[in-house]
Image 1 (spheres, rainbow, N blue to C red):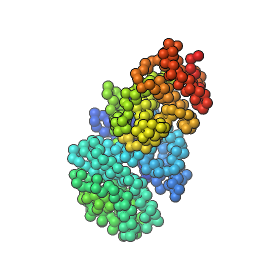
Image 2: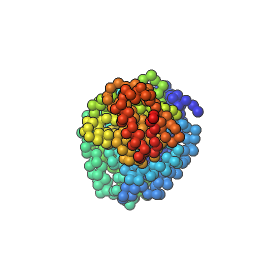
Image 3: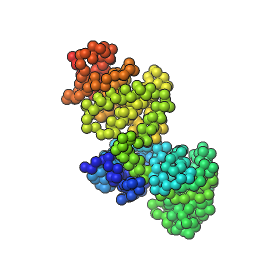
Image 4: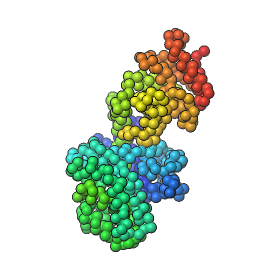
Length: 500
């Protein structure tokens, strides 16, 4: 297998959107983006959410069938070459965990549910890569169940927000029976405006010089306007008004016959059009240009930067920057965090020498942030830390990864029953044990010898080695280690054995 840290390897992005699933295979070579394959399937996952917020089995099956087709194309790709992300529908779905288990089996790769702001950041990364420019810009991405707005300059996103309104959700709500009339458009614009109202000032036209529309809705409307001779592809208030009248004249989505309109997009055009009208009217957008990049390209670019960073003496990863910012914001004792990380990673290498780089990094991030909850309260600070990690905005991290790091931090002290389900994962079990042992060894908050403790595997159990001289010099630490062994004996998935 090829070295996964080679920067110009083919990389794959799976974008599990609310309307479409997409697979993009590309390379970033000497700063240039080169796509080799692209697949799209109109899965309409977002239309499969019922009144209880549950994905229907029919929608689930559409998603699984698509992912199996993607998996066939991804044969031979190492896990580090693939990143699959899911967006608003799976942020909302109450049964998302059950779906993700089946979806990951179908795809053969981990699937990450990303936050709305992380989705927005990646969208901007894709646009900035494929359509670079220096002037301040507004990027608009109308998806199936969410709309992302990003202000940026060059390759830097300055502000990114996500709003829970999209072409699928709005079409289902106001055009669900297929009928199209002026009153439905008015109601849809009011609903979209209510959701987007808080963004009107921070994203107003005084903050940008050019507006770009990425992804499906903007692309579809641009194609219709260009194919109909209304514009050269740019989206204007006049073009949107023309398209609304054509939709009303048709009276029903099944009768929509417009040049450039693909049949599979008919049902969601009215909702997407209402959002575009709301943005044009309230955000001062006189011209919205179709953008070349979108979420999937941003995922490829971000993955390339992660792998390229592993080759550098000073790796560059947005997640490291997020961790440092969280340490600053929550006034973390950075020296203590580094002591704990040094010990924990040394112990981890003893029991899981073949673990991938991401597993080590997640443990390291958990060590870096295990005390952020102290800013809230010293009492049960591990619980505050876990809550913050599960809910804080951390650019570069998916919601899934934040939850995993949060589980590690929750397990840093106290009983193990609170993370009993998570401990079913062998990897997480070893990570938790290493973090707990490192916290105990560094409990005095003074410099330590990271080599004084060594952890190894014996059958199903763990053996912690240290010599008699060290034990005699550190009786309080040995006392805590003995208590820790009792904790694992009571409720852990394995025993922790100490020297006799």
